Image: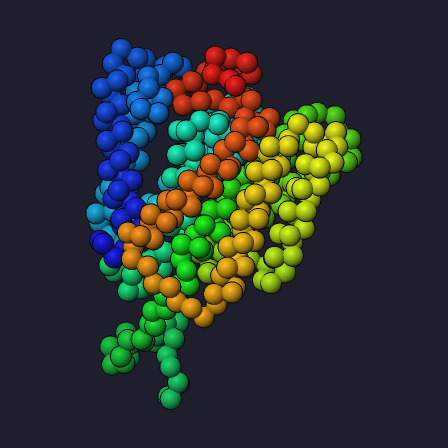
Length: 134
Length: 208
């Protein structure tokens, strides 16, 4: 695993997303499932729906990172691509809940950074057959 | 095919029995040139594409179908989509989309962003910060591609851990330039924050 950037990034991001998802439930007790007013977890404003999304993304990334390089590449590129696509679609559906990317907050910077990192690493690295078996 | 190297395609076309008799084609593993710089160029492409699409969305949402406004919005939208597609091709195929002409097109785009900041028109007024963000990201792509061109032939091997740290720093830099640019666009005024879905009107609780 230590020789594959895709497996490393999937495992690390998966563990962090899982942790954020689990810790999120500790700060969102009493908050509606998709409440419009969430609770702050360090810099992430979360509600139970976001916790579930963080858990699902974290589980997918961690599973793929532990399974193998090909799985990690696919899941990294898919998660990063979907996140970026949702953000871009949101730019044109102004009055829509899909419009989530364009806010000048620290959490949005981190979300965009993780999206481009996952997509870039998934598309660009571990492409040789030898690396795919790592 | 005797005397020639067998390609993976040739091997796949052989019957199973013949494939078993022949040695598997040797796959040469070629390390990528400066993978961290390549990643930063791709990240900047994603960022610049997103910001150009935000410029397009802002121009179209300002209303009135004047021809110059429609043209400016369509150009920004097409250029944004081309940058996103180009970044995907660049990262996936290890070569810049558009070949050597790409740097001239990128330089022209940088000049256009600079002109939009210096001489705002009704179509581009109020988008100064978004244009500045697009300009910085375009220059970042140009600088990264220039670095890769000058370093052609060098193989800079990097340990995966260090490569990821460099890539994460690059991704944070690109996101740090892109996010304020997106936030300054019209989409940023309507954006729904994390935990704030349902509060859609501009000027709501979470709005800037």
